[in-house]
Image 1 (cartoon, chains in turn purple, blue):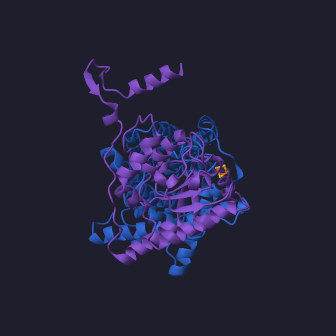
Image 2: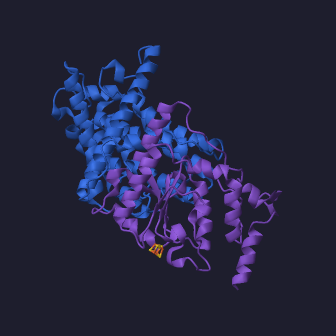
Image 3: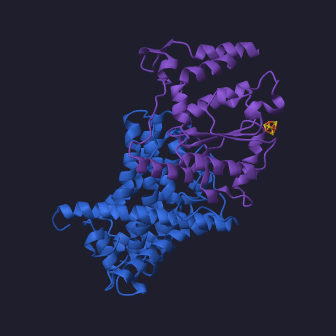
Length: 221
Length: 313
Ligand code: SF4
């Protein structure tokens, strides 16, 4: 049963002839028509240094986190919006869509299945984008290091700016990591997006090594 | 409109610049109020500045087509349109750029223009969430627009004019001349419609991130989103100014500029605060509930206002 569904899903992505309500026939190639798979390119920082510094300052002080939790550590992200920790006072906010987020917090172990979504969400984020690796699991696999379906080192698949150790780390640790990230952004060292574009082949090869059923374009905008 | 001069374009640009700053500061204050009600410390007062500059400074952007470009432009036109066709301060040339005899009608079109623009732009983005949210947004906007239009119609009959400047003039000479006191029924209908247009709870199901993710702008990013954010700062101020003009006596030019601005800020701030008070006190309506609400009470009050105005004047 499961196998059949799987096949059906692949068939959806194949080229086919579709008949419009007016009886017109046209060809649909989902991989070409529904997705754009142009390669990412390097976006160099602004040449005028003070402007770039100012922009970086604003980027650091306005952090939009993608509300997507991957592992058990993600539970530590929620208290930040409560009255007790109140991360809003540090300029942190949450967005429900990767299009509008600037920081991706990987909340713990990334299973192969989730990795696919992580890659797609990361690629859909725009502009200078930053990644926080929450939990030991993102650093070396943590207690899942020999598991059959989780990745061990997150930064083999997407560039990571700041790691947080602990199983699980306290919300304060996450706040501290956000602070470190701010320093990194302000100093102009947080160029993960460009790193990803420069080493695109390497990252893709690593991703494809673990994601066996690659049924999506190579780069999803 | 007394002749065209290039100064007017400059003045209009200045008006928009002034409003963007006022809107951003207002957003900071309102964010603070929301936080304090929730017993939090809340955002910094200048957080909205960081957000909007960060958004404009995004490096990469992707487009989904022509309408996707035009969506934010329409939206911005809606906000800026209300602003430059409404006198912010009566008889002050700087804040009166393009007012003319029939501006009430034009401005009420501008209120709707932004939502339509989002429908086209969000539709082209191709995301199903955008399409659903746009449908909800249009339905809700249409629902509260009816009572707002009835209220405007009622005061147009009352003052026998469709020029905002004339309506403000008619309200001068004491607090009791305000539409609030001369036509309280129309004011009530319009103030209920105001809640719907401010995108705050209980009527924020369209844009609330917990619902269909962030509503029509689901696919919007980078400078496109920055344009929408800019509009979100000026649109509420523009609407509030319109309400102050129509129902709360507008802002006249006093002898001292300081006094004029203080009156301007106080009036707009307190009218704006009405939506915030309701927003922090009431939970969110589902879209069918909010439409049912709008076509029940505000509509009824609006019809009464029109009938009463026609009988009295
Ligand atoms: S480090 Fe511990 S808490 Fe964090 S994801 Fe791994 S197992 Fe869960």
